[in-house]
Amino acid sequence: MTTVDDLKRRVAELLATYPPESTPRQDFLDARFDAGLAWIHFPEGLGGLNAPRSLQSVVDKELAAAGAPDNDKRRIGIGLGMAAPTILAFGTPEQHQRFLRPLWTEREVWCQLFSEPGAGSDLAALGTRAVRDGDDWVVTGQKVWTSGAHKSQWAILVTRTDPDVPKHRGMTYFLCDMTAPGVEIRPLRQITGEAEFNEVFLSEVRIPDAHRLGAVGEGWKVAQTTLMNERVAIGGTEFPRDGGMVGVVAEVWRERPELRTSELHDRLLKLWVEGESLRLVSSRLRQQLAAGAPGPEGSAVKVAFSELNQAASGLEIELLGEDGLRYDDWTMRRPDGVNFLGREAGYRYLRAKGNSIEGGTSEVLRNIIAERVLGLPSEPRIDKDVAWKDLPR
Image 1: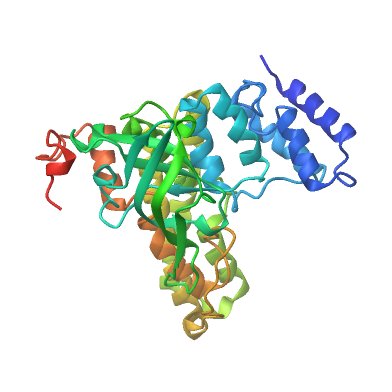
Image 2: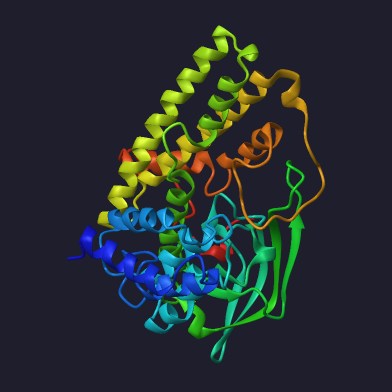
């Protein structure tokens, strides 16, 4: 079994062979992956050592102390948090070798083609069609709310391959080349003024069957792995104590004593306690992940994260008074990645509104918590045994 001393020795060997101060960033990331120090819980040869996930912090701390470069998790967060674990779980050995290394080393950026104009909260209602044509599949449809599509080379894609069976059974999952003919990306401007996400039109896009992930018709099963990892990636983000959105508000409180009132003080303390509770619960969730696959508990963490961010950003606006109403720049931008805490107070307040929608709406996640965590009866469904093509739309 890999020990802490083993990891420290491997890190020391990596630093000796590739000194951070003289090694180009990309070369260092490549070398780190090849040394099995990228995500140590992955298999050997795929950037890992089959080591306990809980020991990843040992590697990260040693490399950070040496000033070594790391990949930009804001830029490739969808690849790291959603595409990679799904490819590892359902991909072929050839897919593992082809996609995981360039994903972790930032050579290829990924996005997620799931939601559609008529299938957001009810993902299983999606209608983007994939039709088999020899060794290829021909895909036509529209996806929406696709973060980072304009910067991505690849996408995880769920399609409808059999409209004659109930909606959960007729879906198939693919890895889609975003530079392929027929892929059109259009920006969607947000309330912040930015366009970090997009709508994507797929017009007879050809995807080789070798880029199918999982069996034909089992796309819902594969997508569940992605979605559970997505909620952990959003809600289970590791922050230090007094970090995250609550930490931002606490810093304003410390720096601007003239803004304080007893009522705002009470609200800040309440949010700080909630933030600390969420931090500890998220830490426990990451420990559970180290022992196996993510479960529905990630939905609860994601709901709590969304509500805390919105409450804390609202308190910051109130605390700043007139200064909180200022907005630095409404220029339409297409950023490289998502930054929940970016820019100034007005941006944080507006951006936090999306937290309860992206990665699964809070309403849908509460249903998951009720049914799969608490064991409550599910809501009556009349569409479970009806062919997708016969559902009202």
